[in-house]
Length: 272
Image (cartoon, rainbow, N blue to C red; front, top):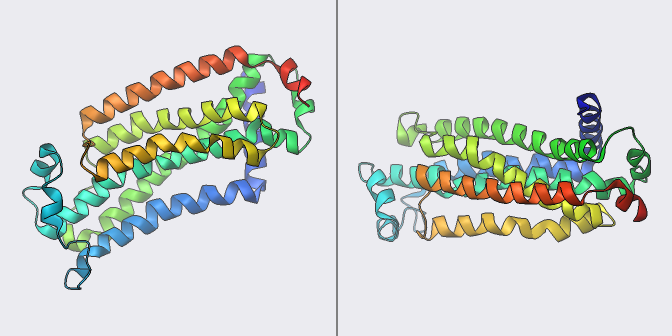
């Protein structure tokens, strides 16, 4: 395995991403909204408790429909604290997974489809690397930055959540054990899901926009998790998070195996 060649592919792809505003700006704006703006607004919600329309209105009735385990975790908190923990620790947990998924998907969509648009794919195909090395380089060029953004975003989210909610909580309450599993086990698998799907699609797509549109459905499982958590169908605890990660890693392995078997530079050259 020629790791020098693989590193060169990764560096080249990342340079292209940084220079392409259409690709790079969403990688900055979306994490900022989810990891900074949303937790700050959620933490400020208890200050609106005296208003006619407030997120705290009917909170106790809403909690009655939540799983018993979640109700037990919130039982010793007052109303404002329940809202903060419920929203920042649990409801926004599946939203966090959108970050590694989106970053990996956007970069992977640009990996081959973008090369076609820029007319640089033919030169890449004739580089002195094997098909496996080229495929691995493209995979890592999407997965590594996705994990960097996910880990950095987790730290940023924790700082914003604890600082913004300090007047209500009076202590550091984030992260809990479930979030550590989510970041260390599930987020890498979600990034793998996004990139493995998008690499398969982008190889066949004619351009970046087509690849990204075709691969947009990959976000649907995350949206189902958001709905399931908000409606009380599921409870993001450590056990459930471990099982979710195990399932996603299995899907990743299958998709990457398929991608590795079907990836042939001769087929790519024929589509130019």
